[in-house]
Length: 417
Image 1 (cartoon, rainbow, N blue to C red):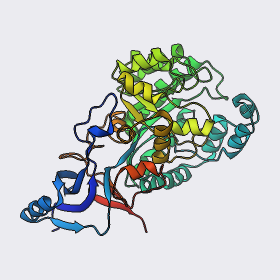
Image 2 (cartoon, rainbow, N blue to C red):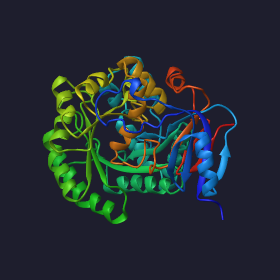
Image 3 (spheres, rainbow, N blue to C red):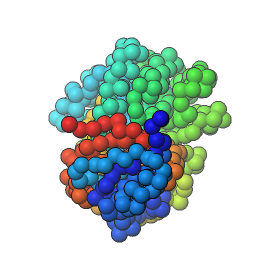
Image 4 (cartoon, rainbow, N blue to C red):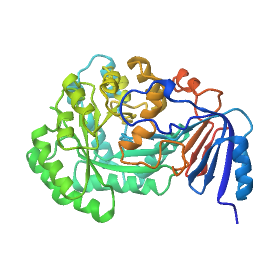
């Protein structure tokens, strides 16, 4: 039988992120990589980290497998993308071209674009087609170092179509190496073909959709787009309260274009408030003095050509800041988490450690996952090997330096040619 233990190394640097706080700023001086280090894995978790030479002796005593590396590598925790919309069909390239030509959101929507364009295409796609395209996007994310991915519904906007999306997400989870966290975003917009009010639509979702999610184990999270063009805080609050009574955890699309959503998120003790590009000092203070994670989505800012989330101010105020890709067909089509996080760091003057924390253990916290995002004893053996001597190079190259190997739960799931 193969040994339960594996020794991986040596690394020029092992960046563990052990013992760093969940909230507030993180100077690089607080993050000291281990030099000439290794990882000793037991099954799917980390048994020990430290000096490679000392771990070699420990591994020999345990009768473990030794997997020496050829070349120079930096080892980082696997990335966590806490906000994506990668279950969809169709393309919004016309939206992108129109937006860059100066068309407004309303003009694009009137021309047949916008979220409704994706809803129409997604409804036409079969469960098998949605699952297949989703698996391709997940595998691209894995190759770029993302080992845990949150994926939302929200392009179905009927009970049956939302269930189709959530079933596709569950099916893809069983066919890919990444860990998938599903979120119901039935409250994305009020569908054009629904004849009732916002509140009657939301009530239908509570009565007909959420119970089936529970029965089929399709996810434990509920999200909503709180914005003038979607759902008001007044409309959405009863929906959130009813979802919580059913056992769902809450997250909020908040303050993307106008403030208000983050205050609701804090009031309801939501797990996270995501976007926050329009947050003012009042919202920043609320988030910093709460347990709600602030999730920056630089991909949307890049895709829409608008201001970034005030990440520096949130950290300086004492908030927990996660960084996610918001990969979606409309406002954030790039989907490259590392590149987006590096660019956010440049524009918001974030330390390398703050950026890395935002896509590892702080992002995991936004998904209520405490077993990943750091490389220390007992954590999942989710880690990345970058072909470089110093971890600074990874952010310096602004996402162009990709991992040579991606490991998930103690298994190599991607290796570059």
